[in-house]
Length: 249
Image (tube, rainbow, N blue to C red; front, side, top):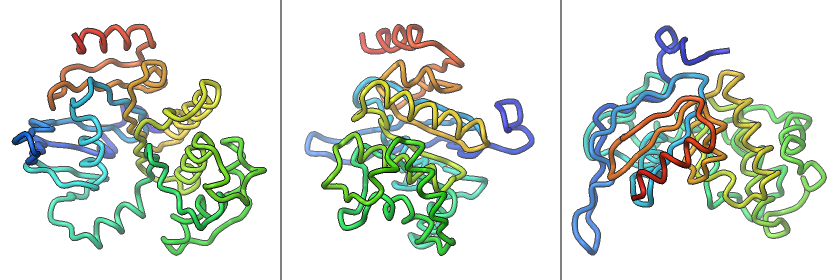
């Protein structure tokens, strides 16, 4: 298992150096990120928190190559994202990354089983039915493998998205509010799975507003006004909530 202390030999899974992101809106120029430098060590679980508009989702999208920085550099597994064309970016994401987003991103025409298997199928990998069903079983949905998204609740769709990310065993798993649509018990199950993924050597980067969810992470990274303003390591939910309260004043 790779730990925080192994990062000097393995290198970070994701590294941002001096990253900024600016864009124009109807109300003027917006500086979503203002020079973020941070490394996400291999085999760790990091939660990103901050007030609304602090740049959390922007940071996640830049780290995953879903958006490009205005300046600065992003590296994933040592590969610089700057300069890669869309085909190369897509191939890199397909080979190394998994995603769990608020919008689920499931294909309506596919069953839960086929949605879970899709990333491996697109990558040309052999689909092992037992492993797909195991991923669904881990989120409590094995019996619903044949249902399509419209036949599932929002929470169930989110669990299919989690199963899809777990099945592909990406080197880096990006999650944006992965427990937002789940009840507390199911949310804890998903967080346990994310923590287990990090313990097995995967790297998990999660945006959340929930101090309890963040307490499952090795590190909590706090943003405010597009800047990193604090870090906590192995903190409990109470300490995380108190830190958030200070930032929101």
